[in-house]
Structure formats: structure tokens, C-alpha cells
Image 1 (cartoon, one colour):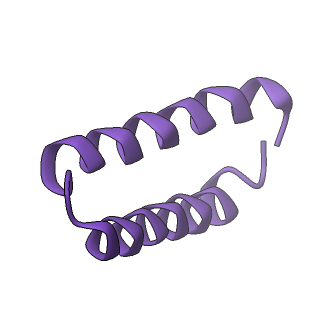
Image 2 (cartoon, rainbow, N blue to C red; image 1 turned 30 degrees about the vertical axis):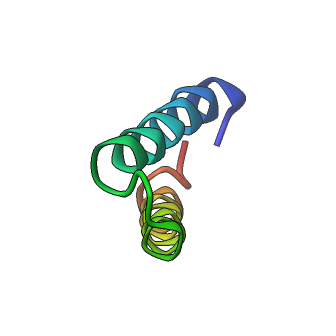
Length: 54
């Protein structure tokens, strides 16, 4: 992957994680942590599968 394709992907990851935290898991630490780990793993799997060729 090139840097130009990584930057928007990382920004999207941060926006999704922050949005899920604020909307669903404001005062629940464990659920929030597990959801964040899950989101990062999904983004990583997507990047490895589809964005590796860039």
C-alpha cells in the first residue's frame, strides 16, 4: 500500500471507532474495548485482503 492510500484508511478507522464509542459505549469500558478491538481487526483483515495490491 502507498502512503496516499493509507492515510484516508486510517482516518476512516479513527472516525468509525470514535463514532461507535460515542454512540453506543459511552460509559462501558469493557464493551468499548472489545468493540474497538473488533473494529480494528475487521479493518486490518479488509486491508490485508483488498488493499494489499495497491
